[in-house]
Picture 1 (spheres, rainbow, N blue to C red):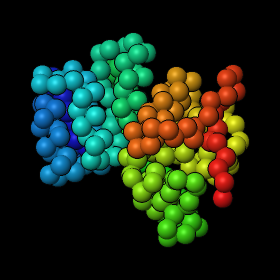
Picture 2: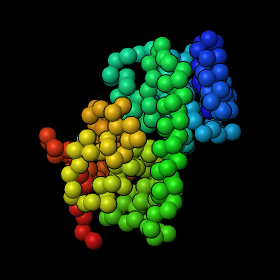
Picture 3: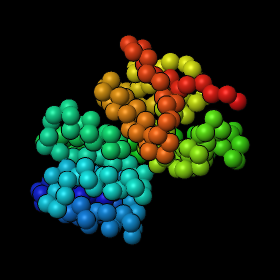
Picture 4: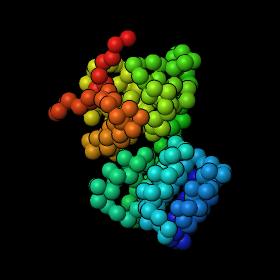
Length: 232
């Protein structure tokens, strides 16, 4: 677990709590160090403080998502919902507010890692052909946890990929926010309608960045979301 935290007392608590649970930790003080460490050494998980001395954790997350889908948990003193939504839109997996319970934080790390590992295992055992699942201009590669639009990797987070794969599996079917949370999230009670909306917004943005006219994700006001049906 890569810990990115500039406050010594909080960093010590994180190191102790995670190592007590059997995790190996590596602690850095700045966002720049975190990005360099991930590029050079990789990591299985990142606990990322939002208020760092050199750059905002949001910006660190944005840079990490350009080259890695490592699970990220934000740690912050900010309690406003807008900060939570911004963090999720950037591709974070969870968000813990200071002061936090070390037991709760380690439990969240375990839950996110279990979800990530199970999703990858399920996809690896998928019956999809080696070339992937083709849906119009989309290609889903379950074995790589990857979605491509016109052969360009969309760089989706696990939640974004999970929703897109569910939509593609049932074209035209409308999923409510609650249904999406129950089927994609391990702990749906910890998510909210705004959480789903944030990930849908980011998924749409990534589709539009590759193909500006792409409007595959359909909003059904008061009902939920679906994917538009395409010709075979």
